Amino acid sequence: MKERPPSPLLDPREQHFRIPGPRKDLSLFLRFLPADRKPAQPPRAVLYVHGATFPSALSIAHRFDGTSWRDALCEAGFDVWGLDFYGYGESDRYQEMDKPPFESPALCTAQDAAGQLAAAVAFILDRQDIEKLSLIAHSWGSMPASLFAGMQPALVDRVVLFAPIGRRDAQSVEAAPALPAWRIVTSEEQWSRFIEDVPAREPPVLSRVHFDEWSRLYLDSDPESRSRNPASVKVPMGPVSDIGKAWRGQLAYDSAKIRSPVAIIRGEWDSLLPDADAQWLFRSFSGSPSRRDIKISRGTHLLHFEVMRLALWHESINFLLHDDIAQPL
Image 1: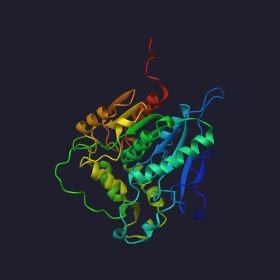
Image 2: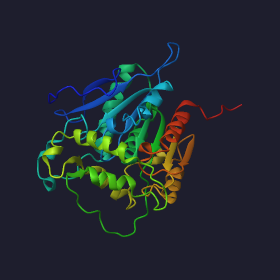
Image 3: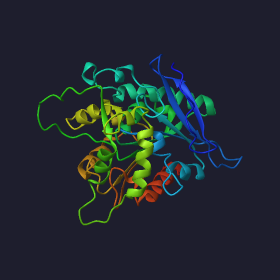
Image 4: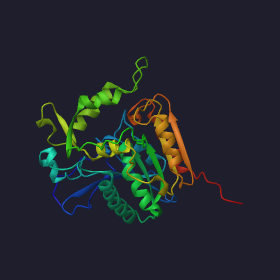
């Protein structure tokens, strides 16, 4: 595995780990923040699974006005872990990302990422000496998370799918186009994506001040970002390939295999998860003993950055904390 300089701590209590993954020559990065837990409380761990374009430091661990979703989970008694997939954040980059993009197929598909997730879960369970953990996954991250949960149901307590990607019926028989190994994403492309779902007459739900602070850190997540004009972050294209296939009727996992309670949490303006997709997804988790479909007002696909983020935190924590299945008489 490659030697990398120490990663900056986002909190004085944060711990970092580099672990081997499915590719022997590449290391995976995990960040860990312990819970504010009383000695008598049993350990409860949550692993965050990021989406297609930015890593754990810029999602669950990013602090808006001094507080993050991760902080709220720790305060509620959860040890919180964040994994960066290969090609993102502090994890190693695929060697193919140093080559022209069309020389290799799309990198970091759900199948590949599920193997990375399996390595992370095994490390966490051993490190904390626990039998299972819960998963929180955002957007495309719902695919490797659900794929893993279906393959290893005994290791997963509960699953929160925040703004997941659903399956759509194929509109044509055309095959999905071949995609490159990687792409570059600028800050302005992120800004446009972050605000495009807000209806025209509605007030903004994302602060430009907050975004500008986030954007600087986003560019920092790729050491070569500022060598490009305009500055941009290189990310794998496997997630885009998976999403395209899902919208052609080929979801990357079998949701009926999941045996854990599942919560779908989404914003009312999320164009990537309209009501029809969410309803199909909810019904598809037929093996889950408890399902919830929670829609939060004035939220988009990036609800965790927006004014209603506290509602997202509350709903996720409430679902993870409480046993909602009554015991038979």
